[in-house]
Length: 126
Image (cartoon, rainbow, N blue to C red; front, side, top):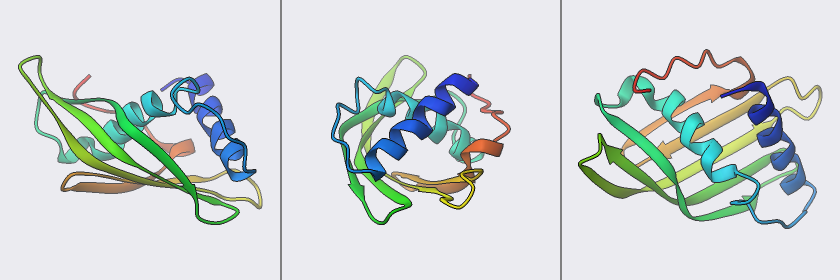
């Protein structure tokens, strides 16, 4: 995920934290979660699995630093098979210095946490 996309994602989280209402699909939050989720869950995924956006994406501000997202993630196995899995993510922005953006993600039975700003981006299925 390029730095521009990371910055756009963080800005959109900040917009949600301030109470702004906007189209999360046009803001590319769903597609950002494709890359973020794949990276965080990469070690848990079978070869050939990839994600293609969140259906029914909803956001709920939990506190001044946390937003919870829910919906259903499209999961693909190579080009042959696709289905949806329950999706949940909690994004926490360190409000003191904004140098840490912790992301918890759960898709179906897989879950993990990482810092968006220090991820190595080694997703092995791309």
